[in-house]
Image (cartoon, rainbow, N blue to C red; front, side, top):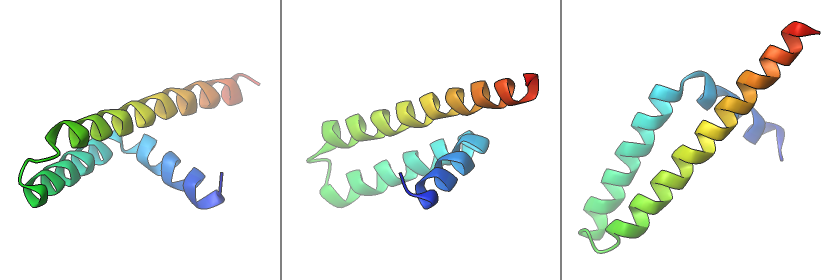
Length: 70
């Protein structure tokens, strides 16, 4: 993965509350623009993105713990 993506994931994991809020707003915006036509797909994508960030957040925490213990 590119360095940009790594930096973006790290930043999102450090500020997970802000990232979640941003995902919520993006999903709401997409739902409004589509008139609710793609509600289930938008919700599914939002959930997958939140799961991805949560998994990465846990991975970053685990890596930080390993780094501190070495």
